[in-house]
Structure formats: C-alpha cells, structure tokens
Amino acid sequence: MLLLLLLAPVDWIVMSVLVCAELVGRLWKLISPLQVPSFPLCRHDCSFVIVSWHGKSSLAQSLPALLQAARVHGGDHEVIVVLDHESNDGTRDLLQKSFPEVTLLQAQTSLYFGAATRLGIQKATRDIVVLINNDTIVDEDFLAPLLKAFEDPAVFGAASQVRASSAQARETGKTRAYFKGGDIVWAQEGILTVEDSQDYCPVSWLHRGAMALDRRKYLWLLGLDDLYDPGYFENADLSHRAWKVGWKCLLALNSRVSHEHQFKVPRGGEEFIHLIVRRNAYVFFWKNIDDVPMLMKHCLTSVSRRMRRARASGIGEPVEMRSLLAALKRLPVILRRRLFAARSAIRTDREIFALVTQRQQGSNILSGQFEAEAAK
Image (tube, rainbow, N blue to C red; front, side, top):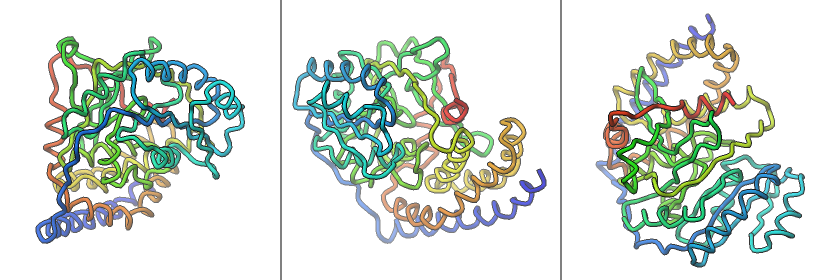
C-alpha cells in the first residue's frame, strides 16, 4: 500500500490543475459563450444501430423481435449492424441469408464498443438513432413510447425500461448518479409503484441496452468521446454533457426490453476490464465535474479510496496504479475538452444531481453499475 500512498502528491497536482482549468473555463464562458442551438422536432423514423462481436446466436434471437417491432410501429426505419473485424463466427452469413433488409457494416480494423458505435452512427441517416445491444430482446410495442419522448424539444434521448431476464438480474434502466464520499456512485434503482402510472422519469445516463438519441443533438455534442475507448462510461459522459447544456435524458417507463447479458470477456481478460473501468472513472470526473468543492474533495480522498479498492476487490495495487497513470496520459486532452464544454454549460453538476436523483420513498439501489459490469 506504500506505493498508493506515494501517489498523494500526484492527486494534489491534478487538483490544482483542474481547479485552474475550471476558473479559466468560467472566464472563457464570460468572454465567448457558445449558444446551444434549437432543433426542429424529430421525424419518427429511426436508424437502429447494433454492434456485434462474435454475436451470431444473440442476433439470431434479437433481430426478429426488433424487425417485427419496427413493422408493427410503421415508418421508414433502417437497421445497421456493425460487425467487428475479428468476428468470424458466421454472423455475416446469417445476416445475408436470413436478414437481407439489414445493412451490414464490416469494420476494417478491430474495434471495441465505443468506436464501433460511432461508426454505426456515422452511417445512420434518420433523425433518431436507437442504439441496441445485440443481446437485447425488444417488446413488440417498445418503440412508440420511446419515440413519443421526442415530442418535447428539450429531450436529448430516451431509454427503455429493462425487464429482468433472470432472478439475479439487477438492471432496470432507471439510472442514478450520486456524489458521495468524494466520488460518484453509479447505480440502477428499482421502478417505484407510483411510477407505473407515469410515462417518463429523468435518468442520470442512458443505458446501452436500448437507448434512442436525437442524432442532430448527438452530433452537436461531438458524439461519444473516444477518450473512453474501448468502452465504459462513454454513454454516461454523453448523457451528462446533454444535461449540462440544458437537454433531458429520460427513461420511457412503458417501453420495455429484456437484456439477456450474454457477456463475453474481451481481449485482455478481466483485469483489463477493471483497468479500463477505473481509468474511465477518473476521466469522467476530471473532464465533466465543474464544482470546485467536489473536485477538491475527490482529489484529496483519492488515496484512501484506492487503498480500499485494492484491499476489497482482490485486484491489488498494480491495476490501481496503472489505471491512474493511464488517465494521466489523457489529461492534456481532457483539459482541452473540458474548456471547450465550459462555454456552453447551462446547468451545474449539483443542479444535475439534484434534478435527476431526487430520491422517492421506496426506491431501492439494485446495483453499482460500472463496478457490477467489471465484476462479471
């Protein structure tokens, strides 16, 4: 643990840099504010984007339900499947023979989730892009309540409620982020009984299982940030940026899907996943949080949190140290993007947390989102 203690001066330097960057960002906003544009209401035609890596069996189950839902809803929709360069399990043959109406986009290099998703959205042509995991089974009527959210011009995106596919499943789509103990707690909460009669509720981030985005607003925000590649936190980052410029992220409570969680350990193994999750947690905080007291508390308490994680998770000091160093390598880019985002910020982090995370009596925290994913 001595090595982790020796990182304390690094945290203090990062804190000083971030506080200075925040003050510069606020000054830049006063001198040269960036106006958030208004967009006309979306047409309700969708581009469905699915990323697949060795996912033949998952697509064989999920695509028929999605295509049927699109037919039942009606409209001029398109389905795009982004196939990883190294996906050689027969997915291409399945799509060409059984689903000729699907547009197949073969990546020319090996991509992870974030880069493959950006590639699919680049190919999309409709106002609304619906990102769906290849192991998500949609209900036949899931689309109408999802798209109805976009009748509000302030909506950036809406996600479907996730139905438990097993007794152990803890995903609902009702995402909440809390600032606690110097860090952000990421959680999914149970759907309250009183919410059964509601159409929508605000969420901290749009989950990857099934989420619809206004493509024009997505492009104005410059899309999913490649700082998080290969994955994890990129959708939380995008959603937080949308909240910050005055838009909304909602859970469509009457749009329901089942997420089968056919999880595959990527190249690099489980230690690699833990490393990326921890690295990207640093990236998110350093890039997005503009509240100075939060920044200071986060940096001053980082050493103790690292030591607790190293003892509790069984990962040990090496991964904790490597994740911090990997985030530090990205700090120059983080600072540039932080300064640029400051010019268009309307809401503060405290306002976003207060707006989204108003706890109602009876709400249950079901999971720590990113920690749970890393532990799979």
